[in-house]
Length: 390
Image (cartoon, one colour):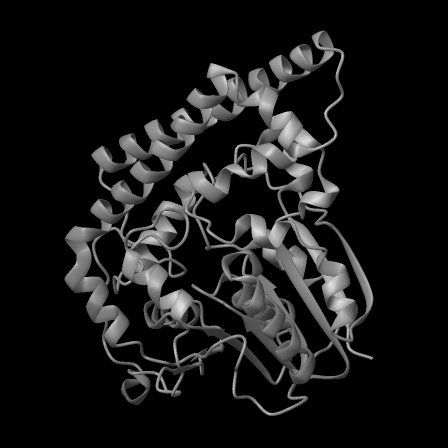
């Protein structure tokens, strides 16, 4: 249950400048805001000038050589020889590191106030927070967390304020911090609406992290009996619970392993996941898909929103997408994106498998981490995969 569930209606003081009820993160100082604008400017210049120039020079060199690269390695041999690519890649990595560092610094003065909010969530929306579920943390996750650099170059994953840091840093990550991050998960709402039915009884969000996808499914399916988000991170779940309750949305957040949830067979009729599968080793992906099949009721639906697999990209796009492996702390990036995910789903027993880009245009979203997920390449920013249990 929520740690503050017994104190419904308890008084709570927000930090000064906290903004709308959908975001407990305090407003940044003028100095912070100026620095965030600077970092976004660097990233946007990199996306709009360096990356297109790298691609233009790549095509020119390939044409001059009379070659048509058919593999990412062949394309990479040409691209990586260009000094401008080295500049673009290094610019992206440094900007990413500075974004998380500045996000953490901007919320640090409010640590006590935010900590009190996390520890005293009124629970008036009817949501639940289940942390003592006896979950065993897998070695691969524990090792990454101890290294302090498990995903996206974030060195703060064990911090109780990781949710606040991510909400602030995630906006810079998307080059849209002034528009906010997570207040209105419009793209995820569009994703939720692609489910084949209009009514679902119980919905499960795998690897929910800070709850943006879980929240979107609850908003799209308000009549569902229960919407559940599970994750291994206690700190992320606490922030997800706070955010949902602040919005007056009833969601259950539970600390569980997506590959071994502990839920009964056939206990959900819609299961989803957002940017999850590329964060796990291949054997955990396999176990997670098997678990999802077990949990779905006959006729239930499975849907993921992730990164497009390499097979649907051109050789040069695949090479630029590979940047995240070494340039953004994504250790399992290539292992997952190199797989035939639809075939994996069919092998697990799923039917009606299909994949494709999410048809959604976000005016605030210009680019994130990978050098190719930016600007004119929006078609490959968000990739959906659907399947059903017969």
